[in-house]
Amino acid sequence: MDIIFNRRSIRRYKKQAVEQVKIERLLKAAMQAPSAANQQPWEFIVVQSKESLRKLAEISQYSKMVVDAPLALVLLGNKDRMKSQRHWEQDMAASAQNILLEAVHLGLGGVWIGVAPLQDKMDIVSKQYELEDRLSPFCVISIGYPDEGQEHKFVDRFDPERIHYEKY
Image (cartoon, rainbow, N blue to C red; front, side):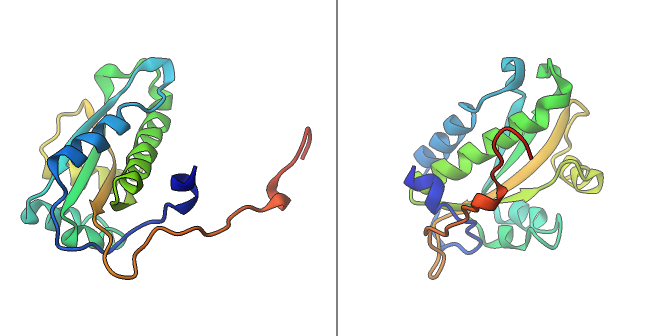
């Protein structure tokens, strides 16, 4: 449980590559996520080239950190696998959270950069990777070893005022 309580968005990274074995662990964690009707709509693009990272950094004002990350994962929903089309984003969100939690476990840090449901951002990613129509970009997660001052630490967000039993 410490991983859940200590995880923070990490936006600055050391200039250190993420080992292939850790990339595979992140992707295995992603694919263990719960999924509506067990549809498992996920597909992933592993991005490590500086040119591709630079292009991903241009998605929005909130994606600038990608340019200095050693790794980014682009999460895609495959429409051919969607038995429950209204729930694919929930499946992808669970997958993204698994990646972020596994990153902490592996001594890495990451930040979730939203893409879906904003069509302009989805179009940018689709064009960059020449995606077929059956693939819908969901998010980008930049990943790396946390740089100085970027650590995972507990911040208490518990607020009993937001809890309601039996009625609101």
